[in-house]
Structures are given as structure tokens and as C-alpha cells.
Image (cartoon, rainbow, N blue to C red; front, top):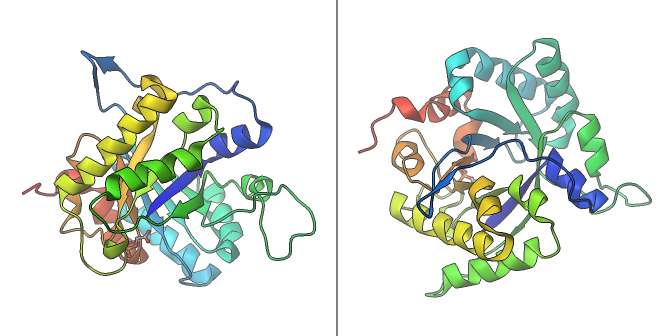
Length: 260
Ligand code: PGA
């Protein structure tokens, strides 16, 4: 599965169909190779777990388990259910926490008679920095990398390069989601590198160098370090293990864990 995680910048850019936003994080390309200068993102996808009170308690625990140094090394984000977003916003703003947050879905429409939908502008008003904007499944076959890239092209078709540069793309093998089976670090790197190369072909090397690519699928404290050591993997989309603030904090501190 590949999920496109749109940052607020990208959502607004796509919505306004303007290519005039300045991309602030620039990456350096030396001797034809990308230097990993992208700021890692560790995102906790809480799915449909917990009410708003539990979400607030979770964010408080996470914030106290992480130090200023941890936040200097990685961006930490949580994606709670819609019903928890306002509570998380109040806490993050009130306590000036360095935790970003976002939603798990959004409507393609800005407003109107769409029962049950929630729009990008509504999420932006709540201070959401990210949203899981879409996903598609990759069939398991010998051609799965080629299939992934075809689907990726379809998803990004018509999106201007500056917006693509500020997207986050999560590669998650379907068989690894929620199963306890994790991809090898080499497989995660192979998929991330193929995604980056394809973006380079379609949107140019600078865009490809800026886009952050995450691995997702049964990420845990015991497997995160070698995955994060891969040059094209810029972070993780963590499901089950992000529901425990202590475990998620350890995952965010992957630098302190042994790679082997
Ligand atoms: P998991 O979920 O970490 O529980 O496998 C990953 C996801 O679906 O984002």
C-alpha cells in the first residue's frame, strides 16, 4: 500500500492549483546522488483507537517522554481520529508542544452537501499539518515495484512539482500492516529508492530530493533502527506501536538503538 500524506502546504497548493509556494526544506544533490538532508518524520497512525480524553493523555505522555533534543532530530506527528483533533490542538497550542498532528482522511471538496465528510480547510483551521490523503493497494506479484510506480504516477498526475516536494509518501507492504511481519530494511530501501527515482523522472531531481518517503507496516522498537539507516527512508508510519506513548517515543529515538 502506498499512502500519500499531504502536508498542509501541499493540500493548499493542490487546492489552489498554484505552483507558487516556496519549499523551505531544500536538499543537496552531489555527484548525481541525493544527500539525505530531509528531516525525518515519525508519524503515529492511531486509526480508530481511543476517545478525545485518551488522545489528550497520549499526547501528554508522548511529549513528556521526548526531549528537546529528540524534537531537534525528528519531526513527531500523531494522526488521531477526527473526534480527537480539537482536544489535541488545544493541548499542543496551550502547552506549546512540538508535536505535529493531522487527520486520517479528507474530502476532495472544500465544503458543501457532503454528508460525513471533512474538508482540507476545516482540518487546516484545526492546525492539522498532515492528512492521510489517499492510499492504494499494491498487488503482490513479481512486478510489485512496477505496479507501485504506475499507481504512484496516477496519484500524482497533475500535482505541481512544488506540491509534490512537500508531500510525504508512505510505502507499506500490505502483508506487513498490522501483522507483526516487517519488511527487511533492504526491501524498504528498494521500494523507497524506486519511488524517489520515479518522482525524479516525472517531477525532476530537486522535487525527488525533497519528498519524504516513509516505511510503514509493523514498525516496532526492535526493527526501526535498520530501516531508518536506509538512505531513502525518511521516517515511519507507525500503527499499533504508536498507541503506546512509551514505545512510540522509543521508536522516535531510533538513533539510540542498535542497527544490527
Ligand atoms: P501497523 O500499521 O504499524 O500496525 O502495521 C501501519 C499502518 O497501517 O499505518
